[in-house]
Image (cartoon, rainbow, N blue to C red):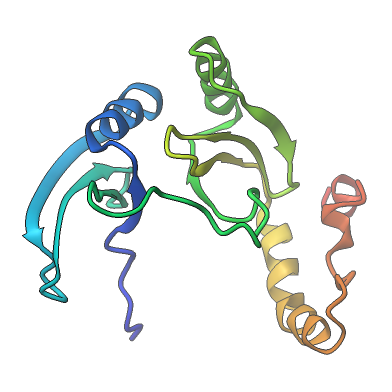
Length: 182
């Protein structure tokens, strides 16, 4: 039996809790489900007033944010490229992905993509706090996932030895996936 049942919630910092909730409700149609505010941090006892808001990201997944008005301004890890740290959300299908891209762009949000990752297609954009978001529509076949499962440990072992991208699944990037999995 697995120890972990699911992710209870994922929490990030925000500039403005109210504006963040409104943005996620308006642009990603998430429901605002809970707000918690305290003057002291329960786990440490530290005096640091905060607002903690929770949004329904679908299927029991919860996205949360903390507004910390007495902490220094929010920054990001400048040693990590902006594309690395992101939150990816699954959407129903490619039509939903494309319709959402159009709606976001009509609202003045810069969107990259769709990008074809073979297993899924994605669009990328930033929330008002500077967090990179990804919406993904799955396009993989069961055979693709079986092949990736078959080579995953070999890939990881090769990476650990060489720190070079293993080619066990080059079909994902070289355009040969359609031929390989027809």
